[in-house]
Length: 315
Length: 222
Image (cartoon, rainbow over the protein chains, first blue to last red):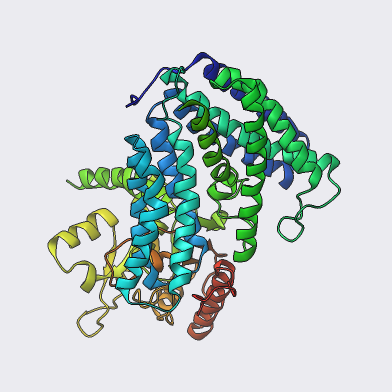
């Protein structure tokens, strides 16, 4: 069992400091922009950056504290994300009881992570919650809309609790030949690459994007954005891996490409969900970004892939 | 004793009520700039859940807490000693009687006195939480207050989703993000019928603003 706090690895400290400097530079640039030409556009940027400060403070705090603090933070993010998901969908009053049981799955799943019980971590939601939530609906004896309700609840649990939980698992995953203090670095590697991939795909798409990729789901996505993003993330993975992870460059580069591809899939999958529900953003908890789900859409897809990669090589 | 109660009230507000509403529940708020900065004012809201009062109170800062007075039914909220202490000391409600025959003077006199002290009233003119997420016709007491104090601003506030998180008649709280929109303030319009229809119209517009988008591909949407 890893301790609640571990002292951070040198590489993790260096990368965290780098992120802090990047944020500082961005804040300086945005405040100059806002002073020169104040308007709704720059106001949006200021809000967006302020939210980034809060996100980075919480996340880097957990990464540097290492150990179990990160598990707690991700448990809370799963709760916020599942709540946001539930609030977007027109569930009925009768569905409340089944939803309550679904909420209870969050502390249970994170307890399995906390104790490092990998077997239960991998089956609890996909198997047991999959069986328990319909059972609760059956006991309510409401057959109208039965399949819709159990299907929507399970999809939400899978994506916001099970998939995201894979990022939390990284905090307790022992890696052979790698110090325990390195766990935070591995999480920082995954989350940093996922966010960098979002930004890289956006920038490549803006500058070179012509051919639309999925105009019926997300009109902004282009082939250039996807390919440029995947390449950039693969290169970045090769550069950051020696600082944050036990991965050699020849393994880190394909992982980076995988993160690029899965990050894109998470982004467009959440776009499809929002289109179906007729909303632009999933919420308003992060001013300038939208909801929690808008921020972690890619991470929910990249986390399982990354964890399985890592376990394949190092567990 | 009174000062101690006030400190306890502020502490609970900051350490329990605010974090609960912001993190455990979650509020999607529109029109914060239209929230009155100081009293006297009448905050008029629709009512679906006990959470409504809590959510509306946490819109304000702890400094404004002493002047914030939810108006509530005495027969319900003063029905035993514990609830009475909780309602009067911690929430700071102004109890009114829903049964006119029992009371001597006008049942809304305590509300007028509070307005004269410069306090802000939170009023639910439906008179009861009723069916979750359905608005009952407003009672006319709010017109009486606006007419008696014609300079006082009336601020309509529309809430959605609280009736699904904690509906009437259920003790099980199921978290969900609530929607809240604050409308433009207005004052007495000249006659009771006109005032009430103005209020209903403003609520209909605010309700449309926070209504969840239609979801036609979904069989639960009936």
